[in-house]
Amino acid sequence: MRKIEHLGIAVKDLEKSKLLFAKLLGHDSYKTEEVESEGVKTEFFMIGESKIELLEATKENSAIAKYLEKKSEGIHHIAFAVDNIEEEVERLKSEGFEILNETPKKGADNKLVVFLHPKSTNGVLVELCQDIS
Ligand code: CO
Image (cartoon, rainbow, N blue to C red; front, side, top):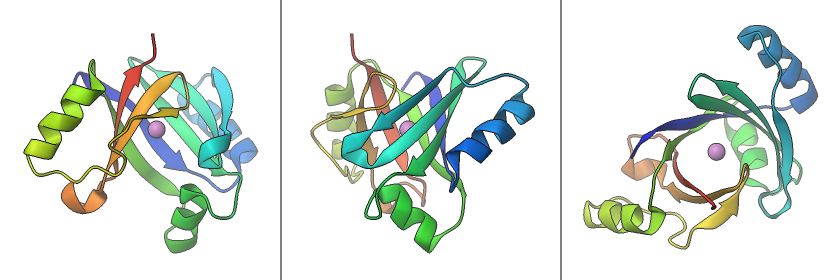
């Protein structure tokens, strides 16, 4: 894995949180993107070499909606940049990690993404992401 690509933060109100994080970081977000298939709307901020991804649910049964129901707003996942997502999935499987989606899916910000089950990663939802070239 190369670096922390982004931290995903679950929020209830994207418009409000967008303003809050712009104030916190001292600069505006660089993109808003809806991922229809995941039932989520995202807002991205650059911070050095990494990003902050704010996530708001757009559907009642989306992963973010369920998360907010059970927990509260806050850090939802940590995403690591990888060069070859298939290779990394194979490596992690052989190390005993539980993969949530073995076939990479298209995520926000032009990425292929795979998630690891938090029960195999100390309670942390881990995302692997590879740039779509
Ligand atoms: Co993410």
